[in-house]
Length: 186
Image (tube, rainbow, N blue to C red):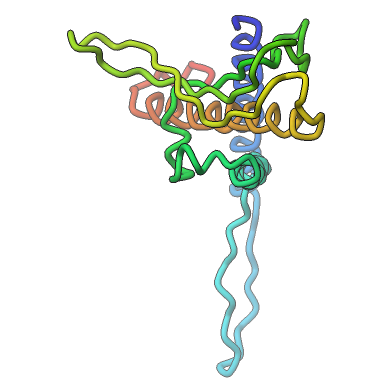
């Protein structure tokens, strides 16, 4: 698990660096641009300006579309009817299929394949306890179709990818609220 977490942190760090580079480049370009507008004829209406999305926004929106497609294809909606609510979970994992570097994609003989969402709920004493929720059950490992296996793995990985985007956005918002000296990196 720590290997996956380290990879996710490294990916998040690289994404933040690329976003920062693009933001800085955009700021430099904005300062350098000189706009010369032609006079508009009275009968011609000027089209509204279209704001371009950054490539990370495009990647994220494509990822969300694919997650939603897999959500429907894998029938996750049967256990979690509201698509937006699947991102409330703290984590997501698989039982019966390896996601670590050394056993990635390997099915575990004799095990049942499930997508497991993890949430934290208070127990009777008010202490937070991890709770596993099955979002999809796909039968015995031995009978799992290879295409279905890949879609299950893809769903979990893409969900984690979106969750990483959400965490990055959360921390960027928090950092913006802090008074930071001008000599810091961001």
